[in-house]
Length: 515
Image 1 (cartoon, helix red, strand yellow):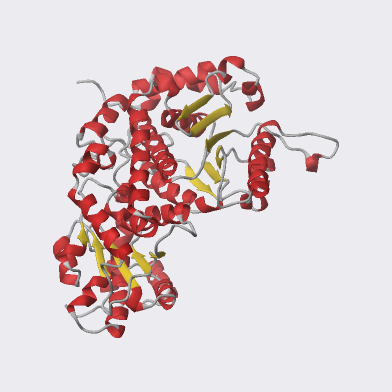
Image 2 (spheres, rainbow, N blue to C red):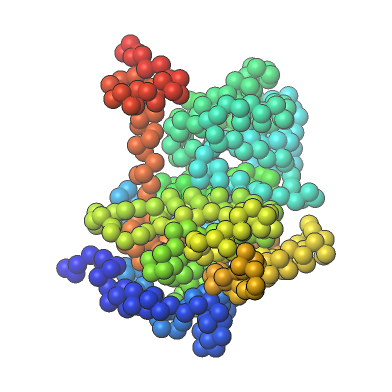
């Protein structure tokens, strides 16, 4: 049996370490015709430009060699064949399966989502007082909130959106109370998204919403028509009061941060139409096919992953920024925070060995041009190395031509300024340049293109996890805080003085409860 993969022991890692000592500048790479021939890639209406990086053919080949030495090929095959590559939870990883055309044609849940969506839109399904639904309140947290919320914001259209969507995630009661004040209970559909139907924040908010409905609607069986559950725990949902025919399941192998492709995406279909949701899935599948079949040097998710590994492991970057030049993608950086940092924030290899090399980068960002007036000062003249991804669109039917041209001009200007810099007589006005970035352009923000973009980053994260030999599909790091919150609530701990002082400060009475 071969030894488990340990990245720093790989010959390619040592080669890259040596190359990093004399890494080319961005300006040098921009003039390297051999590298530039490899730096422009395309899939359908999505193009990737990695010409503004501290990169050379030798470095690129070293990164490919590191990838080939890793378990990437085996894990990628397992991802698409249904093997249990999520080894700590003993599960396959199913989000690519559920966006294949064959699965979509045969899936009874997707068929039920189509029929339910059509019934709501046509008015065949109404509320308890026979008024049509106008509002959706989606209650979830993590992937059950970030994914559908990001997509709904991105695809919201004043002429085509069917219902008004509201999202509630935080256990802070001010959030749900504020949302409910904007809605009429007679025309509001409450969508409860929880894989296990035990999530504390989601159930607390769901109980608030249920009480709101009960206080305003007649006590009749039709009141249940206002509740929908997206869950694997149908019995718990029924006990909560959801009608069985308004429960939409998904498989255990669909992780939260990959769940927008499943029934968790119901709110997307309700807002924008089932055809929109279907096109989103097909866009994701197109990127799946590319990731599975394209040669590694021309594989878009692989290229993005190699850049993150290069800057994180060999040039000392601690963070990466994503800047969409599209206000409708305002939630995309937050969505990627969870996708990237929950997947790659690991310090244990797949075999249980502690890592002594950096794994995930801190992911952050904001839309341009807003970010230019906030944190771009640090990017241009600060001391941190922050590789960036710029995302833009060739056209935008919701904008005007002058405004959209200004947006694209700013994107190109920022890439150029970061790369080339400027110097003069006044050092306070000097720009060092040599700041690396990638540019992702799509023809337009369509459901299909958005599906491709999301899947591009999913597979980028997967590729990084293979190189670092970590499991991208668990999230044990979120469990300890939950357990302690429950223990504090029960009052069954004997905390040390410093912890007791903390509990006093946040005004928690640690009085033990009777059993």
